[in-house]
Image 1 (cartoon, helix red, strand yellow):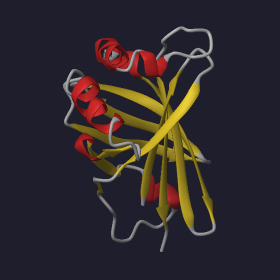
Image 2 (cartoon, helix red, strand yellow; image 1 turned 45 degrees about the horizontal axis):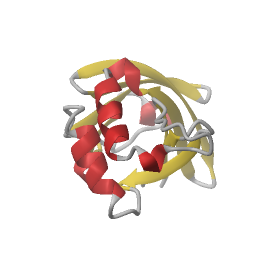
Image 3 (cartoon, helix red, strand yellow; image 1 turned 90 degrees about the horizontal axis):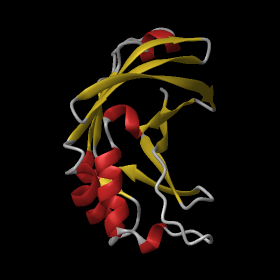
Image 4 (spheres, helix red, strand yellow; image 1 turned 180 degrees about the vertical axis):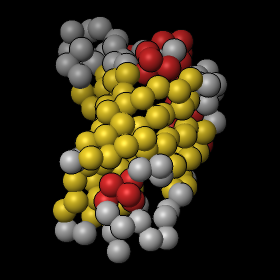
Length: 160
């Protein structure tokens, strides 16, 4: 299982990706169809396990984003699934919102993708905090320091 995220910096919107190394998935013993497998499934993500493969960036993400964001764990619950799409309830910063997602099965692996807007979880203060400590690192060719509020999330689950 792999849970990957991509956040964006610079006016040019350059992606910075990573994973969460520690998350739990409530698996069903006999799910039946893919829709039955997905619907009601819950995931808990430990933000301390954020891993961007950058030893300087990761502590800043923990201290200057997630601590300000008041989030130690992100929880997700799949509300529904039908014909390659559905809705997820995502909770972080003590706020729950629904997100649309897409899914597909390829070579016995489930791929699920969504995009979230951090502003829907009152993420501006956390984004500003991270951008302040990474100000020069978030400057693009135009000299503007920018951190985008949208984050792409993908989940890959081998099926048996």
